[in-house]
Image (tube, rainbow, N blue to C red; front, side, top):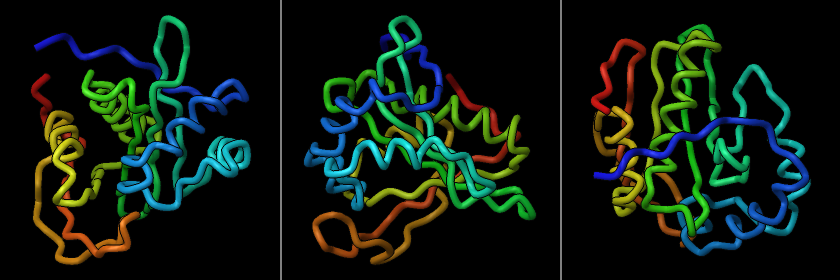
Length: 173
């Protein structure tokens, strides 16, 4: 297996608008991440740079040339419970190289170390096998299946897998 790419998390910049348009126009992104639109990329970028108590969103960047490879978000943070949810998107040209796993690992570390969270979870449609592979590779254990849990971009309520990772879980890299 090839080495997982090294990535860095950073804030969004105006130079990210063009790759974000490509990402949001992608049919796979639109299916599995409804609500993303290439119509207002600049507004989305500006809003995504606003860190709130509920979470934050980062560019998953190539550490050598700083180009956007994808995005990762920490959201629905509950500081009282020490929990949060993660989500990710990867440019079509960067898929299959481990970018999502690397971004998820980096965001998880930040959620534990900076936000002091103890439990992170993520959901994906059961039919999205690639996302299931990402979650498992990043140490997120399948905890169950939620029936007809979320309406995705195709307008269908899909069953979802719930994955979770605890702060002390060992990830086999």
